[in-house]
Length: 185
Image (cartoon, rainbow, N blue to C red; front, side):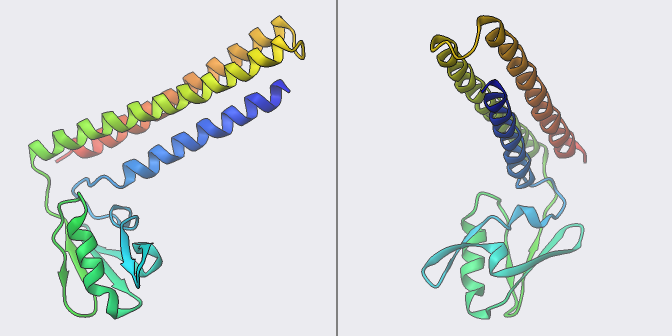
């Protein structure tokens, strides 16, 4: 029973770290990356669809993203969704592909993005704390129902705390790496 609680908590905390990685990959750093735009929702014949499911996205140059839709009818829809996004990018449509130049970041925008990284890392910490809180509650119920002893509960709590610390540290390191990436000129 304890092993189930610990392994469930471990997998949930691991998923929280993966979600943080994906979320931080969408932040613009001054160089082109398909991850910047692949999550954008495009209205594809009335259905909101992620951009990476309706087009190929490539980065032929360090400061350029090229989006080539499989259906040319959707070019304007893709262009509109890029303009509506909070990325601050200006796409150019030539009738077959959309080119998105990535301008260099100014100092103010770098600071704003750094604040956003801090916010996302803090949200990650909260998610991990919530997983730990739920696991602690499960362990308390097991102890109350006499399914585990107090000693087992205490050992499980220590294991949970170690997992918590490990994943919080991992998220902090990911955040610091992204912050360093944002601040390099």
